[in-house]
Image (cartoon, rainbow, N blue to C red; front, side, top):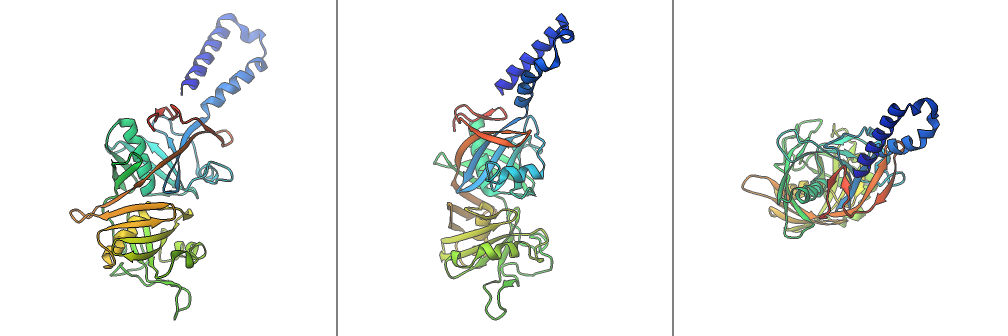
Amino acid sequence: MALSFVFGVEISIIFRHIRQTGLAICWPVWFFAPFLKRCLSMSEQLHFLKMNGLGNEFIVIDARKTMPQLGPDAVRSLSDSASGPGCDQFITLEVPQAGGDVFMRIHNADGGEVEACGNATRCVGRLLMAERQSDRVVIETVAGPLIAHRCDQPDHIMVDMGQPKFGWQDIPLAEEFDDTRAIELQIGPIDDPILHTPSVVNVGNPHAIFWVDRDVESYGLEVNGPMLENHMIFPERANISLAQMHNRGELTLKVWERGVGLTKACGTAACAAGVAAFRNGLSERKVLVHLPGGDLVIEWREADDHILMSGGTELDYAGVIDLSDLSWQKISLTQTSVQGAEYASL
């Protein structure tokens, strides 16, 4: 940041003057303390952007030059809207490791690192395409490289999420199932379960989709979600979705995200539901997915089995975090930056 640079120059000038004049001998240390504290505090500031994809909220920081020391406790505090800006996922942009444009590290609101996040990929894709003035960028993740493309609408981004996995070991599940289109799992009375026989799929992270006949709001996912997320059948836990089909090209989805809870949208859950619907003969390869925060278009491309996800993104505001105490404040979006990477065009 420019201010950090200016204060850095001021510090060097002052100490050079001290050495040349011997002021350090006759001037007390407390004389410099307020100024030095102000200078040091500037170096402890971390700039971020708050973004969302259909209400799926993200804090995005740019660590390509300097990696901030943020442990799980700090991530949890910043992700909690009671103490920080609040988000579903905390996104760190790092130097690419395998020839892509950036490496995206993802932490859930509970501080745990996860493999993939479709809506975050779309938001980061928007930032990088603006930064690079391009229509396509490659975003590396723990789950592998994802390709983001610009759509006709400026705030709409399409991401190639790659190929889904269906093997029980790949989900992963704690026991073997020959057919993951419908596994034996239910909640409620044996003779009249509330939810049962979900489809499971891995789209960079594990998902279980329960097909329901009534409104997705009527099944108490806020109560059953935590129990299903942590069920012993899912050794790495799982994202839990309720899906109601309307026709062969349209469904409504409600999601309990692993390590987060109920969210307004989950891109990978929409991908998982779209793929699972086609595998179960419920839909075509392209479906419109309605989520509480908005709509996503999911296409499971026949040519290569890659999942394409398209939808809107929003840049909410810019902010700065004081790393000494994790206090934060909003700042102007005009010519703002995330650790020096300008996104004035947004």
